Image: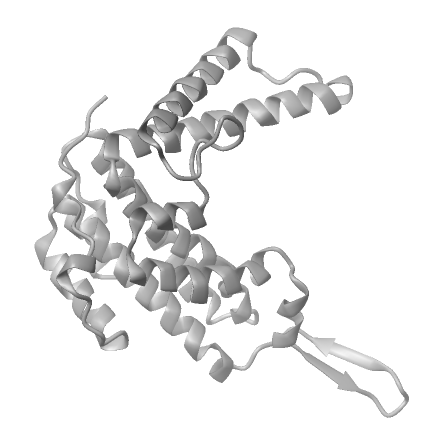
Amino acid sequence: MELSESLDEPIRPDEYRLAILALGQRARTLFRGFIGLQDTAAPAAGRALLRPMIEINTLIRFLHKNPALHLELWEAEGDRNVVSIIEEHKAKHAERWGLAPFDENELEEKRQRVRDARAKALAAGVVGVGEKGPVLPNLAKQLLTIAEPAASEAYTFGYRPMSWETHTNARVFLSGAFEQRNDGTVSYSDATEGSDLIGVRALSLTTFASTLELVAIVLGLLTVEESAQAILRSFVPQEIPAHQRFDGRAAGPVTR
């Protein structure tokens, strides 16, 4: 957390670095939330915060691969979501709640940005973007572009299991405890022992340390990069070959 205080320092305002800074700040917010929940009656609730922490880590790696294009796809996906929600509201809920405060010109501008971004993605052959649907590839497709074993491992062993926590998968109840009563009834407790959370706590720490390292690389925070890397390696000692490591310095600034 002391290392992440560097994220409060101002940077020169090009769009790519601002996006990375914002993602770093959000990762810190999630990590703070996770830590805060450990001292409450519901420490297991912190597991739900791990999935977006891993998603942020992966997205930073994806944006780096082609900052100008991938940043545009990320922003356009936000526009696509807004248009979709407004259209759904108009079709299903306007009679009860009235029309949303967007005029058609605003919506058409957003639709056009989505069309433009989709055309660029198709021309560039971005994996996971088709003629319809999302213009930002889902995480599984992003990993094909990222092509880093460590990112793939985080997805398989961290992101996917944590979907149980955020989408109420049936397996989430295996972490609780059913107790058979003498009268034939059964009670259930969602409480989790502290010892059961050691692995989750290690995952939260290494994910945040990794994200902080990526952000520090892009923003040129060399001292933070080295220190975050040392924290990460203390929990994940395997050395990553040079050709498989993230190198955010190659991306350079982006302005639009």
